[in-house]
Image 1: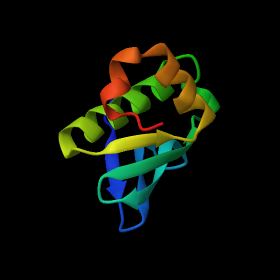
Image 2: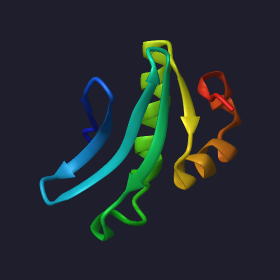
Image 3: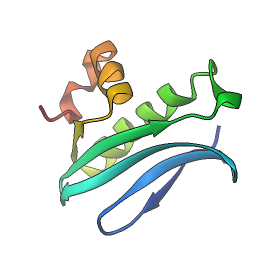
Length: 93
């Protein structure tokens, strides 16, 4: 599954899928070293395929590579954080 980053000065999203059927995880920039993941949306055609979890893992890997932390505001991402204590190095509480 190809996940791409669409990034802007104030935020962006991690996205996969085709136009009109995109799964996304959106984020806002709180600072140069801190993002807030605020929404995850997965269309019905991708449900049950682990797409949301793949987006969450991608966000964690991006944070590690970029040297920033994540504030988990999105309920889905918060639940993923609880399931993955190994992500604690990039989670800001």
